[in-house]
Image 1 (cartoon, rainbow, N blue to C red):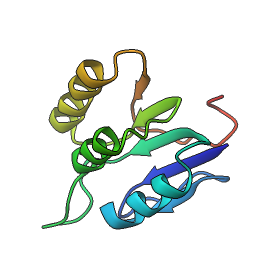
Image 2: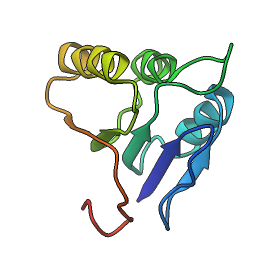
Image 3: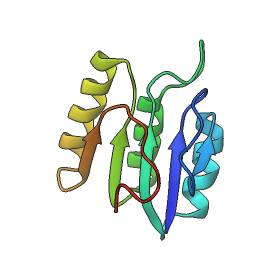
Image 4: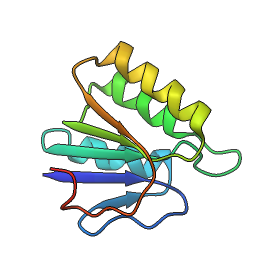
Length: 108
């Protein structure tokens, strides 16, 4: 099962693939659309760059959703916006929020 960590600065947990941009995330999502276990999103992906919310819009447009979604952004207002979007777009998707030091074994 594939795990994607979308963040322009932080290092991914062990066993995860990092995407530093919307384009990198898009490529990974297309390659793993059938075995996508979890995606962890930061909101801010660099000044002037698309955001984690744009990744969510892409996932909705492409119809690619993981079993679990983790929002690890320190931008609380935008994290709430992303959470509300997921609740409306994909109500059955489990969404977790928060920052922390966790590894690939802590969320199954």
